[in-house]
View 1: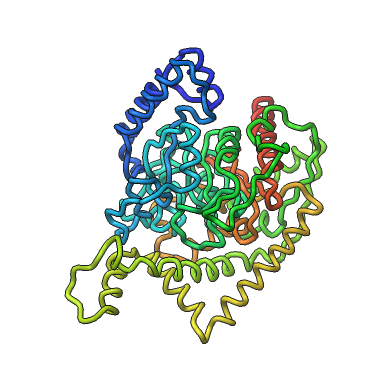
View 2: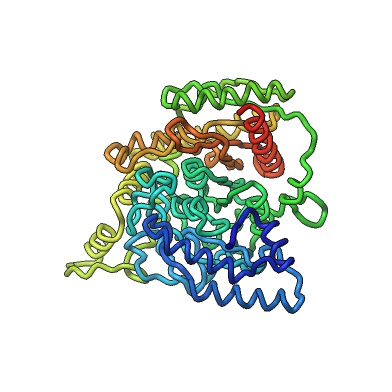
Length: 491
């Protein structure tokens, strides 16, 4: 029977003839079929994935060396383009649309012999925190089918959580990788803004969006980052490769032998003592800080008086960018088109967009249009930009003194379906801990360290200075190993 631990072990097994790529794909296709009720996938590329697996098995048997992702089975969020495959952003307005090209991130995975097994369900146009805003229906949390998986990348998270693939890609505009990772008990990495090219990622808010990675461990996420990162001629905002050596990056290799160092860690007082934070989450994170202090690390409680401005600034700016980005979906050139009789082009646009977009997307387009309107631009949009500038400056100052900042990923564990849908403001406020990294462009990760008394998992969010994924990944791996060892010794 096929089992998967991590990519490195998988490759060792292949080289020792303990299984094949075809075995792996067959296993995951069976798991997807048996767990259809989770609704994690929009489309499964079964025949194509099996064909690719057989080709890779043949290459390996002929003695060809393994590429970095040889036979690694990957799922992608339904907002990431894959040539000649449908991409709909879980929206009726892109019904039946087939991508003409592959996203740079996807192409770089394919170039290393990855197998793309399917596209995953998500909140429409990546707008949501629960995966309740999809035209394909809700994704269910595999740990408790009555709970939300988080969003917007809920399908990608559940695909890894439920063992339907090895790793998956999501997108993170305000926490859409880290929060579902937290709810599902897996690793969710959001790199620095621009670390992975956005070319081929359907835009929500262009100055916030970033492709992210779901995995069962930090090492696998690091390997995918190694492969996908770097400059891209198709994306002027993509950062150049962050060289760990003069010639290439090797985040995954850097985790094999962690540096023996004492970290300087900060947490925001206003975050850990915020009234919205679940008491048990607060207690477990504070207990961890005491354990780290006992290990010789510096852990400091610092003031971050701007916390209450983070969510309002985020929603003003992202909805403004969304109202512009989504104006291209008009039913004229591609996607859904209203068949209702209309008198003129304006009415056609109104009908098509009203029928094609879901309620949450419509709400955000309207809000974005409002904050950009002549009478309110200075009062809202300009002020939010000023808050963003203050946050960036404050963040730079924090990381001159500390290696990492730790926070909760979410104020609560996964909640029940429908619990927050009647109150959009409460839903938006649940993003209080994740949107900070997107506003400032810094990398963040949620690592699965804890289990709540309600039996749901929750993680710890770690952030480092912009473009310092090396420290982020090394500290994350250290924490995972340390917490595992501490728990084993004290249970």
